[in-house]
Length: 295
Image 1 (cartoon, one colour):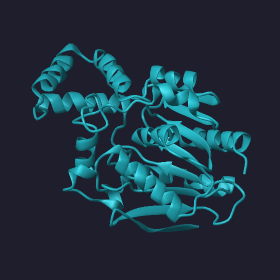
Image 2 (image 1 turned 60 degrees about the horizontal axis):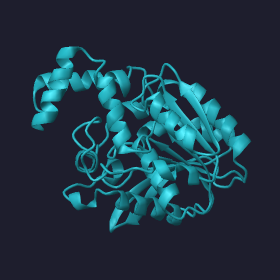
Image 3 (image 1 turned 135 degrees about the vertical axis):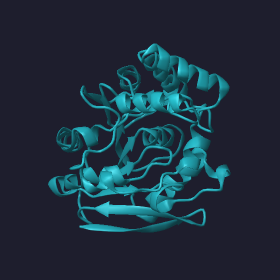
């Protein structure tokens, strides 16, 4: 069963999508997408988890993108805005008990929520290819850039120093980097949700993060919850890919500091393990959810 709709947040519409049973003894799984400025679309590859596990899956397009598209209001693109939206979604959908899954930026949002805000009813968290610190992320991207051909390294260095990312050479270098560590063009036979046209929140991404993955210089540049990770008091599943923007060092940093954590490395995957190895990802979630999370 699928149903969708909108909640009102900051006088705007935030889109949500729900699949699975309306009533279940199992806490629903609320999924927070990446970006800022991506959409819920790619989470639809996990739909069958709802049926196989008898658990409701909920996703939403964060304000500023997708079916919640909004721009021309750069003052909105802060952590506080998206934290407020997460709280509003939980309240509007009566999610008194819930498991949270955050991918990439969605994991930053999740960790900020768990470490600095009241989070009653959260039964467990899934940290998928995410980060506890913008500084650490930038350092690891810089390290991986040093593995690119020398001429591409120079192009990226020059663009960064001049704060001008318009050259064709830079765009080619960035595209190669993202293909290596994030994602590429979907195969022609990929699921429809990956092929579907979507409205990216470019303003929210550039304002909150920066011009690219390796230059955090927006409103999130000082994000860092590393020292607060030991305070997380629910089971945590950490998932990352061997060729991920979330490097094994970043994933291990979270694994070492979160008390009740399990880490699964998908060696051959990039930044969206649930897209590139959907079968293993679903099986892992089913096992972990039913071993660690209790109604």
